[in-house]
Each structure stands twice: as C-alpha cells, then as structure tokens.
Image (tube, rainbow, N blue to C red):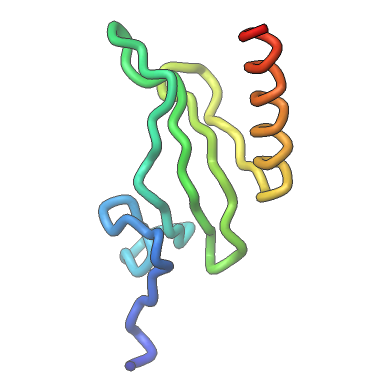
Length: 95
C-alpha cells in the first residue's frame, strides 16, 4: 500500500467522507446519516452520524438540519448517557 492511499473505517460512507479531498480543512470520515424524527412536512428534525476528524477517535454527531444551531458532537460515553436518558423518558411517557 502506498503512503497516499486512504484507509477508511468500515463504517465510512464514501459519499460523506472528506478524507483525501484536496483543499479540505478537516479530514473527516463520516457514516451515512441516520435520520430520526422525520417530519413529513418539513423533513428531518435530527440527523445522527458517526464521524472522526483527522484520524481521531470516532464520535457521534447530532445535527439539526432545520434548526439554527450547527449541532453537537458526543463522545461514546456522552452518547450512552443520552440514550439512557431518552430510554428513561420513553418508559415514563409510556407509563
């Protein structure tokens, strides 16, 4: 393998990936977005992707395409805490 070949993580979606592109400020591997809470009128309310920047540890990126904020990046531990909190809220809502 030559030094210029890009090695992608198994979860990297090539159409979302920016590693090896000329002139890119941040080399990011990205997974295909998982669209959650899709509103039939306005589209996606939240997109979730796995990504890593410049070869670092993968994080979970939450983006709000129709919102004013850029989104937020979570570590594995933060994502696990969020999932647990949402699961607890769902259990309460379901009674």
